[in-house]
View 1: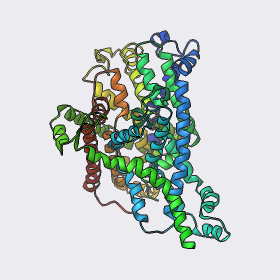
View 2: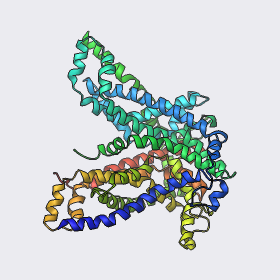
View 3: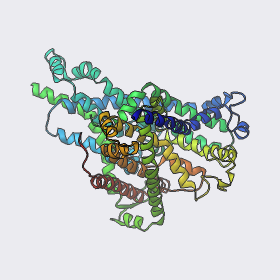
View 4: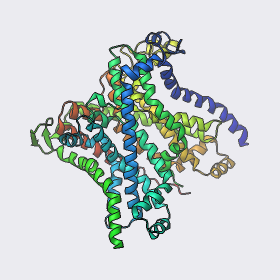
Length: 282
Length: 294
């Protein structure tokens, strides 16, 4: 009895899903097509395929508009930040999961409380602190930005990794210690490799968080030579309002989105599971 | 000896994280509550203690009220669209339609894109000239009379709603994935039992799915509230292309950074913190309905 009604339902489910998929995907496809059109074509041929692929838009975005420089800076900032977050965060998480010591509960809840504070609450004191220390000048501002990214990501990273280290058997670490390894080399050689799924999960979410981060970079990076991609693309948009190289701006959008698309495609399963892991029981 | 080794190890493991976290995260957060009590213009010395004056000033400031109202509209509209739409779409995907996994992957993707890129992309969608995607679409179906004169972002009556629509496009997938995971954790046998009892599809949804999804729904609502209070990048980038439109955080940024009214700007941050705290605590309490154990 249930069968015919279920398959009847599927008949109208598909069109609904297709329509929504088009609403989600079309603006993105349209951006890619737009990045290959001339500025004139964008007006005359809003919908269609470009008559001829204008790869020169990418060259203009990358070179003349400075997006290539921003891309490299974002790549450096994101990879150094991620490395430091995972190193510092996993050490802290291991310390909290593995050892019992007075004040452990307090330190743990201090890290957890960080997820409640809005970024904007500290934006002024943080700016004052770093500029008084003279860290917002020259290349130093990138170092300051990285340190801030690490500090801001620790709550979440420690939260995820503590869970992973807690689920590991203590006996392994004990065995390592008896064999004469130091605590640090037990952590480095035995426990960290075992926590790989946790490191991947934390790494993925920190990648998206930092690659796309805007408000902190907006406040801390004052020098245009050190703009990250979100700042660079936002600036490009402002400039292009007055000149008319819209194709380069579309190309800039594609350049900022492609790395996230690649990471998303590789880790799609972990991302959907990770997003809901805290929310769903069992 | 062994004990000393252990304590040394604990310090080595925790020190880097604690120093960074306290120095660059907790201390600046705590400092904010202090700075908010001063009249302080710019980085130069003139710092006068004014107690709660900054908060009194905020309470009487119409621009701040306007910004709060915009956030409230943002929340109410997002709530009315996102929760039903995400429930609807995720319940379709939960029925194992062919290609469900691909749909889910497509729906979630906007959530992974830089907010700045989303804002610029949608500024093009709303572009007032013939290059704008939305206007081209409306012309194609002969509905051009709907197009506002100054463009969707340029007309003060539509700016906020255009930005809200963009935000929904950006975030809906997250809620779909959240609800879908919740629905998939409900045992199939419950639906089989319900359909043997003659429950229609709607009745199954209303009396099986919703009660068992209550915890997830609660969480989604708290996320939605926190996300809408924290909206910044979309508004900051999109309003540059159109009519001026302020939300609480863009107002904070303008006050604290652009106008360097350090004390006042920080006071806004404190208000945002209190709102987030109050709203998440009270919404958790208000919706404290017995979760169904199974």
